[in-house]
Amino acid sequence: MVNGDVPHLDYYCFDDVASSLVNNTKSVVRVFQDYDYKNTAVTLFPGEALDLNGSSFNDQASSVQFFTAVATGDQS
Ligand SMILES: [Ca+2]
Image (tube, rainbow, N blue to C red; front, side, top):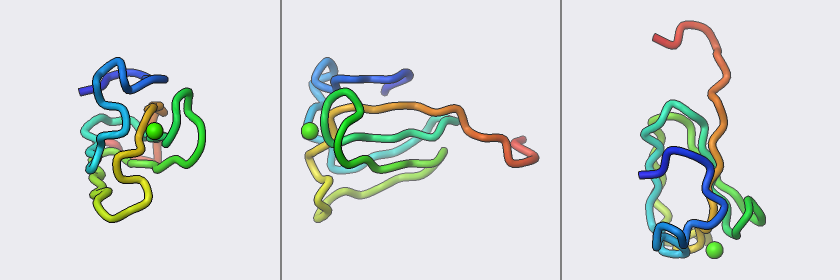
């Protein structure tokens, strides 16, 4: 579980191994193919899950960035 921005996922032994992503935070999460928030990214909204098997992003994720969700009305 990651709770903040992570420029290098290998700190967590998690570099290039992710085959599925789940965003169980209340933030928008962007997951990048390379270190330091570079190259291709996928965006996950709060509660969103993504199966990467068979996609070009499988086993590629190397950094993660969190964004505060933009209020769009009732967030209760
Ligand atoms: Ca990578």
